Image (cartoon, rainbow, N blue to C red; front, side, top):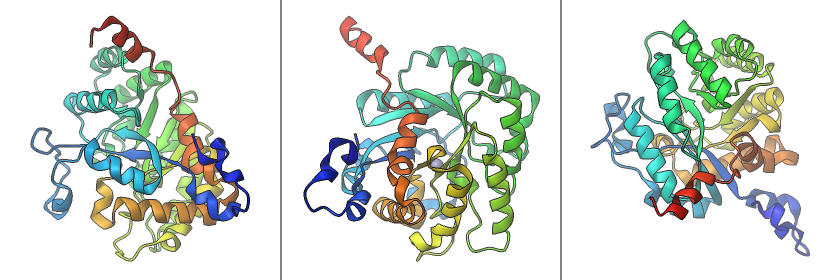
Length: 316
Ligand SMILES: [Zn+2]
């Protein structure tokens, strides 16, 4: 529940503008991994700082300091073992409010079976594949994958796309039109080329994607979209402004992309600057962008019926 909803913003002389940044946020994008047990083929030598285990025990205190009350845990490897490990964490920690898992989208029969298995997981909300690690930039549009996307549409699951500009972002409108009931979430705003001359082309492609009402996007991973180490809210502002103009507050959510965020900053700084930029660009809708849209889109308040049933049975 946000501070606004708790009524804490009503206290006597509190200036609303100063208090708004106290909204308890939802971290719409974070990962856990242990490179010793789970291969992460995308990890390079340049990423040594994150080439170690990251788990809930490290994230929880960071969330408290940053004023984050819940997270959406997102797959980091295209492996069933990663999905299983995420659901283990999610069953233990209430604050992991949703999971974006992985199924083999290029194998629709196997994907269907796996989706049947995962249907028992109360926190499953979406599926993602690391399309940016595939050689084919249009991997998502191959016929076998489209068959699987139809399964997601039928099951009401979100497809999350790490659609990196300029290789993948342009495919989103075609996908959105082919599956009008499929909810599509673009990770990291498609990685805007901050401060580069192709920024305008990215802005056009993002706005074109946003013309489809079933497409939403995450304000996340922007600190690693720039090589500047002195990035701040002002540096992120042009991209966030484009996103707010294109999607509006009801189709935008925020995420830390922790632990990837550690490549150019830290959790606290990402949340401080994210709050600042949201306050700058969408002052009247900060609560929606920082928490409300994530809650609605990923149905974070859905009662985890299955977990309760298991407890009653004593079967867990
Ligand atoms: Zn990520």
